[in-house]
Picture (cartoon, rainbow, N blue to C red):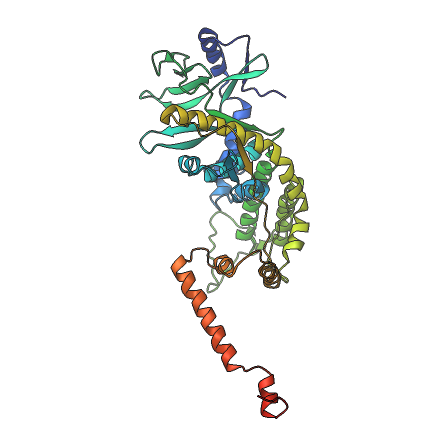
Length: 437
């Protein structure tokens, strides 16, 4: 299904682009963007009360504040395992130190971008050149409009700022054009010819067939349920109820006070018919079902013995399979983004980093028990796959070469002392006269 933020054009020219821009801005507050805005609120856990409060009266919220939970970012991090560990990016078969320097904060931004792409189904990443620091920087673009010609994306626009009069300012990019315009569709030139200096649109996109809207709905539902539980807890002692009293009667409550009621009057506490424990279990069921629908599982406590890495792997098998299905999407996006990065770097520095780009996504590692870890390290050491130096660095990755050399010397010295203190077995036989000198 085509997004409402896709504009189809017969051809790409400046006049037709501006006419499409004017039409596109009429639907800027569409439902698709509104749903994405809610998802972003819950992912960053900002202003989430406004999505819970409308379900309660003001009088109710005078008793307790709404109680939304921070579950959306946890779901997103657990589901998007592909960038849990930074991938290995290579140009012409080797790690390119220059590219690593230019894109030094890429991994941090990409993980956030991947989680949001899965959550909302569609997200853009802008590659930008920092002139002062001579490095690439990356901006996540949640709201954008794509312009299609003959079934191919030929342009994109998105909001960049507001002017002194609070008018919204947008930018348009195609392979040839680059200009800004305001919310009324009036063009603002950025250079003499409105030319794109990079020759490519500096925004790369990831599109999933559907987003994780059920995670957002579950978060809202859990926020409502937890607010209800907070109210039930507040009134767990019961609601005071009095009957048979007139307006002149006043009651003073307290365990150190005697309450005297008129004849025929009564006073009692009426408890809530619901069980707090049952309500909590229902709330958990919302989260559990949503997790299952997204190939995830939730562990609610740390009781029992710790599980082995293989046991955890078997429990995570569905999520691992989902990770495998993600790889083609993200490998293609990595190539697209690199070509943009390459063009931006070339435009600003004159350097061409090379065209043969590849990415190797890191395997997911599960925690091992101490016994499993020791057995693996012993096997690797025995087979010569790691050295003693590697073993030290496994437990202390930040150790300096000088400290490493000192530690190895201490170990060798301790072994020599131990060997000298424990003579070979035949020395005892020699003393018994069984072996001659």
